[in-house]
Amino acid sequence: MKFLDRLPSGTTTVSSGLLINGVSAYIFISIASRDLGAEMYTPLGMLWALSFLLGPGIFHPLEQQTARSIASRFGSETIPVVKAASVVGGLVTLLIVVLALCFNSWLIENIFSGQRSLLAAIIIVIIGLGTAHLVKGVLAGTGRFKSYSKYLVGEGLGRLAATAVLALFAAGEVWMYGLALGLSPFIGISAALIREKDLIRDGPKVKAKEISGALGVLLLSSLAVAMVLNVSPLTVELLAESNQKEEPGKFFNALLIARIPLFFFQAIQAALLPRLSQLVASEEFRKFKHETMRLLGFISVFGVCFLALMAFSGQWLTRLAFGSQYEISRQDMFLLAVSSVGLMYALSMTQGLLALHRQGLSATAWIVGIATFPATIFLGEDLFLRVEIALITTVFITTSLLGFFLTKSYKTQKVNPT
Image (tube, rainbow, N blue to C red; front, top):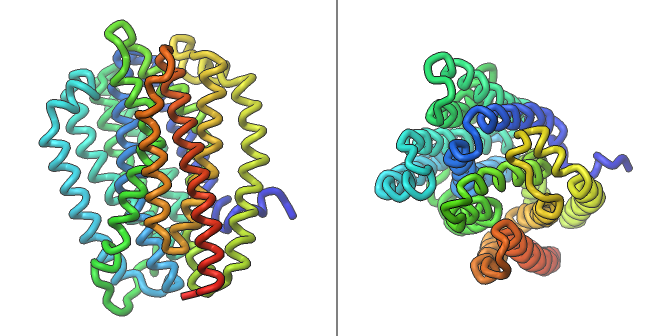
């Protein structure tokens, strides 16, 4: 068996789009970091961190539930699912926009360092991500991974194109980069759908309750996932002293380097859940276990190689990408990489639980995990080390619980299939 054969079908196609998206993202961040400087870059970094929180935390459940609903119908009925998902997604988007407006003063002062323009940017990001994840759910559920990849390419290159155009009018301004972030999902959607045919197929009516019924627990689970993924840079921002204004930006950029595997892991997630959902729907539980174990084996081999890379070259990569003013210690880079590898295990097992319709168990594991973060954040005095130890502890507890729940759920489902 080839090493890459351990990955779900569709992963390679989506990975090509993620590669372009990822490279363009790091180019964007590198340009912004050097142009704005560490202190001015920090609020933009927090906008980016919030977009990660909103995407995986709020809207990725919509994508997952849409993809799973369509895939369980073997991609033959999309219109009823899309209508139901649009109602639910629209209400969620409206609620988040209202909350952002209600807490605008707190966001501007505590997260965006007084940059009022970034409030408008985050609202555009919210609407863009809500629409984009619905579209990606339809594409993943119908197996249109080439178009899914086109979205990623369009979003990444669109971000750079928007930056270049806006730079003609406001070079060196924080709001310019914020607006480019907000516009990029819409550019990605256009790229994905411009030549897509026969995507929408009619079928029996689907009530919004079918999407929202599982979405509540799924949303709770994904919020906890997103908190684990993104709480660390926001915590550094909140805990930093007045003489540490540059530290949040430095930590965030170092985290971006350590999270490179997680970025590309989106390709595996996009293909994995529809595939596992189909296996559960057809009661092929042996194949379900086989595919899950193959993926965990891939992560083990890859994880060892990545940890070695970060231990010896993490500092250099950060300096190369963002400049010497963003460099942090070798120990910090290694610890951040440990948390990233652990999260790859956790996210893989989460997909298995979702396919088995065990959203509640998944949510329980992530909520218990994130609850340990504040309990361990005050151990030690070094700002970065405190956050890193709390993050690793959170990931370890979450992954252990997910592994236990997945094993138990698989045995139960195999004995008593629905």
